[in-house]
Length: 108
Ligand SMILES: [Zn+2]
Image 1: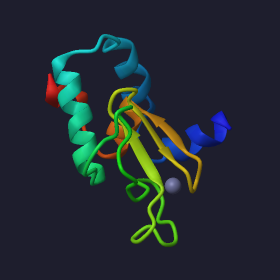
Image 2 (image 1 turned 90 degrees about the vertical axis):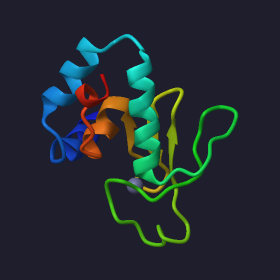
Image 3 (image 1 turned 180 degrees about the horizontal axis):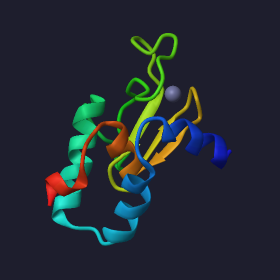
């Protein structure tokens, strides 16, 4: 699963934005929380459950059939994980940020 996942993601963002960012920004900060909130806004999240999972939103990487009426992707602002139940793609915080063209530096 992982090589395919990375291949698909590589088309969207340069590798260093994921690997370096994760290395350099291992600790959680208030600025990071702002980034994670902005990720939710960009995804169109309207609310979160008690575990930090968002309501279902359209997939950020692919146009799936019926995404307008029955989206199946979720974002967890606490775990910093994005998952689409239609393409089974999982992205970590820095990866979904890059896919949305958000730069962690802008939230420092
Ligand atoms: Zn998807």
